[in-house]
Length: 232
Image (tube, rainbow, N blue to C red; front, top):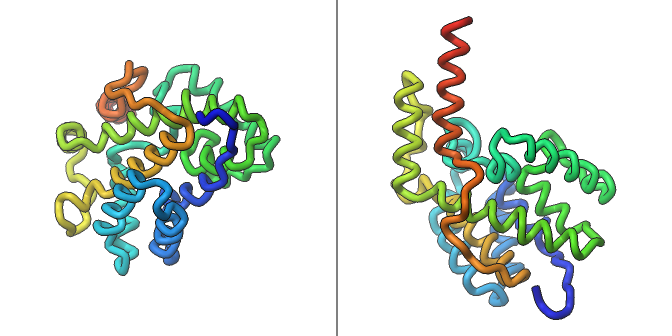
């Protein structure tokens, strides 16, 4: 981080990129772009790519792209603890600690868990403990974003689709968009990471020593469902 600690004041705004899209979603995306302006050139480059690919006048398509990115038969997950630890007990410890911090900061997590990316970003704007803020940036959000961005690589997306195709009779419909639009949320994640990297002087390191693997989790969850059906 810089020599003088500067609490970020824009992560709640950036969190809007990763909320489930509603009628005002495209407008909020443009607000993020306006806020970043010229101060974050690498982030705005990625965000401009996201905006270019975003079907702004087709809310249903945007919602389908969000769902295919982060929810049903997803490319990645927005639950940061799962990205870092999978089903390991360490995620439970993280959730307990984060719940305490959200409560202390009066940060409403809504229907999502404490490690959901938008909840963590909004927490960052409310924290008064500089050391905890830096820990979140360096040890939690930053590493998880690199993992999530990696999940959007062409090879990994193909492998996840193949894994789901073996398990499900049909894959959920992919929105009728160009192939590169299908992974547009990669650019939103990259934009966020570039802001974080600039604010906290993060050093990019890919690949990380992976403690979890979303592709492996897809295969594992599919196997669990198969076993449950077999004994159900």
